[in-house]
Image (cartoon, rainbow, N blue to C red; front, side, top):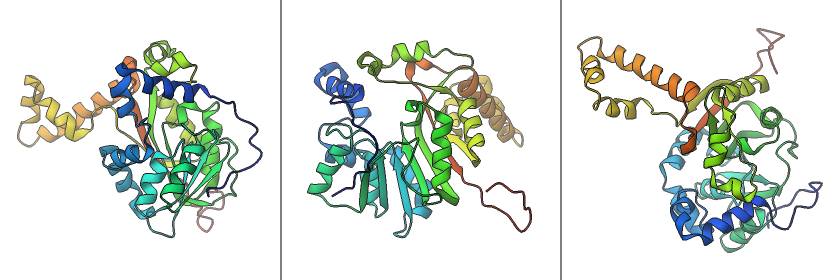
Length: 299
């Protein structure tokens, strides 16, 4: 059976997130929302669909070096274990951490599924802001749709950094973002989970970048929003002037790169369409100390 960490304190009988998911499932108008967010009542079906998704395919591409049997992967805020189970099916040994014990969106659901189809993972009930693991324990720390729920984003990232081995990878997907100087009211008004009391939140992309750097991470890369270069090239075809400039011999590629960088800067940092609840993903590395060359290098 999956293990349960101690010292987390009792959880409420029904959390706002659990009420939200049950409410979405009961509302016929939210059927597409349930499917898009893998809230299916049948966890096995949700995992199967997710394992075939473009999001998971990209995750596996990034994590390929860590999918070997000897690597240790930590899934923080794992919920009912959607990604943990999909990764375990790929042969990775995953440790899942979730504070909610319930059978709908917490480790209870993960435990029940594990009983039907044993996989190489361990479920631990624990607090993301006080991870119950020693320093430098994992090759990878992963989370999906988690960072914007943390009471203290900086502390959560510092904890993730602490348990990573030097050179280890941090991967976070589906992180909501806000436009520059936004109060977040448009985002909150548009998010259906807030009606159930879920502590939905979002940060400006630059804030997330700053918090990652403050935690010690390096080689930080964002992806997933807005359009990436191949998609942007396709969209460029609908703009007459831009398509002509991009099609120019010799300098066309330069125009494409410049236009795309402007597009990313504007849509990611200045004018985010909060009503559509856009999200970015990010990958970063823990520094490798260089004591020989620099005794003052970060540890």
